[in-house]
Length: 310
Image 1 (cartoon, helix red, strand yellow):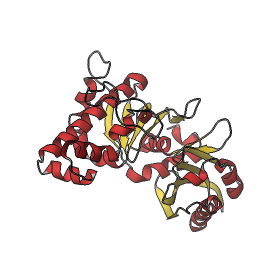
Image 2: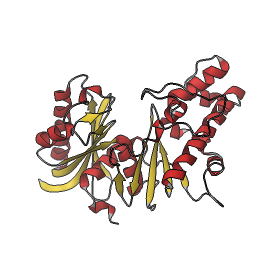
Image 3: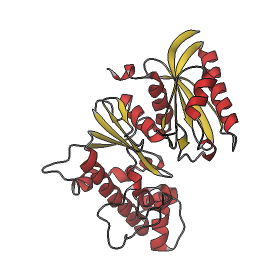
């Protein structure tokens, strides 16, 4: 078996664990997934070990390994914190996987790996500074500069979803309580559930985000108004992000990024709030790799800095 000629990424989710192997060009050459063992940390580490073993056996190559998932490693304890796969919280996942796989392993937040994937060979390719936005069950983000994830001294860089919605309207104030303990967080306005909540608050009807979009495409007034409010809030939130980070490219990911209508006129709405003197240069783009970005970013993460020097 040749030494570390493939790059293996692991995406640890609440319902499934996905593993993918990339060749040197970044193409996925093998992929596997299993259900995430519930409430069994030891079974999770065994499953990850088995996935890596099976990929390497199939390809007859040894690989570097990176892993992504919700939450982050505490710099103080080395333990996982803030993961919605609750059983891994408080566990030494990095240390345990290093022992299980008998090689160095790198672990990062899933939003950071999404940003890394899109920066390397996705929608953000060619930009020096990339901010990856997750609009899904939650709202997260990750920042990559010159091919390197910027985690920050507290490992919370990019967590724009847990800052207040900027330029809040009178009708929006003070906002809903967020799971983080604060009120009026961007996440409470832009996550998938927020779209449905907004529609219900104005119509009294319960609809999913998918149903709301279908209605808007049929010209339904309340659905179109819900979409307009969502885009306005997204524009304000992105303008604040640009005022702070000023990235070359912002790549949108997560389930809501697949709503094509949110991109229509978005740049102009962002520019109206961003602190620019003439025109907004930042590109705001839909992701290229979709649901594969996390596992691909994890694979690039495990490979180290060399692939970024292109």
